[in-house]
Image 1 (cartoon, rainbow, N blue to C red):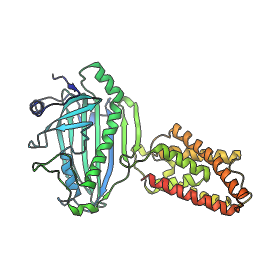
Image 2 (cartoon, one colour; image 1 turned 120 degrees about the horizontal axis):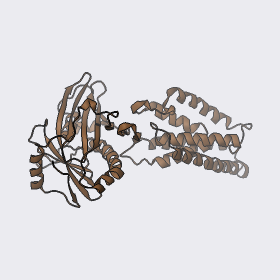
Image 3 (cartoon, one colour; image 1 turned 120 degrees about the vertical axis):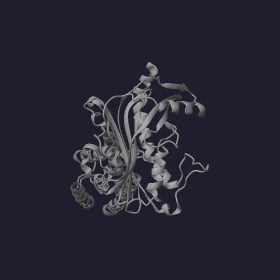
Length: 415
C-alpha cells in the first residue's frame, strides 16, 4: 500500500515527479466496482458540469479547426487550473493507460494523487464527434472513483461543448485534519475547479493561447481564421449530489468570466418591480424563455415558459397604459405594494438561480428593493407633477423610459 504524499508550501522537483510517475504505472485502483455500478444508490457521489464553449462552422471536424485545438488542450490538461490542480504526465506515453500525477492545492497544502487514463473515446457518434478520456484513481489518492472529460462537436449546429462527469467517494487521507479540511473545503474547490475548467477553454479560443508549452518552446496558437468563432457566453451548468441521496448543491448556475453580481441583479430587478409591477417579471421571463439553460432533472424556472412570457408581456403593456390614468390606485396602497413586493421577490430569486430551488434570501432582497423603489418613485412622481407642474402622462412616460433603460441594462448584465 502507498500512503498519500503531501507537503506544506512546496511542490515536488522534476526528478521526484519522474520517479513517482514510474511508480504510478504499477499502482492498483483504490476501488473495486464497475462504472455502471457507481451510482447514488450504491453510495457513489456524482458531480457533473458542462458548457457550450463556442460555435464554429457546421460539419464534422476538419483536423485544423477549433475542435482540433481544443482536443489538443484537453490532452494537455489545459482545462485544469494549476492554482487548484496541476497535472504531471509523460506525453510520450500512449494516452490509453497513461499514468498522471495530480497535485491538488489548498491553503498551502499540496497533495500528490495518482490516476490512470482508463478509457478513451474518440470518433463520430451519430450526429456529433466526441473526444475524451477517463481518469481512474489509484492507490494513494484522497478520492476514489472515475471522471470523464469529453469534448464534442455537433455536426448540424457547429456547437462545441465540454462535459465533465465523475462518480467518487473519499479515498485515502494522510491524517485526520486533511480529511476534516476536505469535508469543509472540498466542495468549494470542486465547484471552482469545474467552472474554471470551462472558462480556461473558452479563453483558449479567445486568445489562442495554451499555457503548457510545446516542444518548440512556444505556446500553441490558434490560426487567424479561427478568430471569427462565436464564443459561448451561457453559464456553466454544475450538478453535485452526495451518495446515499444527500443533496450537496442541487443544480447550480453560475457565470465564470463576466462580472455578474447576482446580488446586484436581484436588487436591480426588485427596483424595476417597484417602478412597474409586471415589467420586471415580463422582461426576465422573455430573456429566460429565449435562452433556456438545460438543467438536470428538468428544473427550469416557471419564468422560462414561453406561454408565461407572453402572458406577462400583455400584463406589462396593460400596466404601462393604466399607469397614465387617474383611476389606478397609488403604488404605495397596500394591495399595489404587496403586488410589487411579490414581483420583486419572484424576479430577485429567479435571476439569482433560474434552475434550482428559489433562494429565500434573494427573494427577500428583491422584495425589499421593490418596496423601497415603490416609495422612492412615488415621491419622485409627486415632485414631478405637483411641484414641477409636469402632466401626469408626461411624468409617467419619463418613468417608463427610465424603467426601459434599467431593464435593458439588467438584461445586458445577464450575458
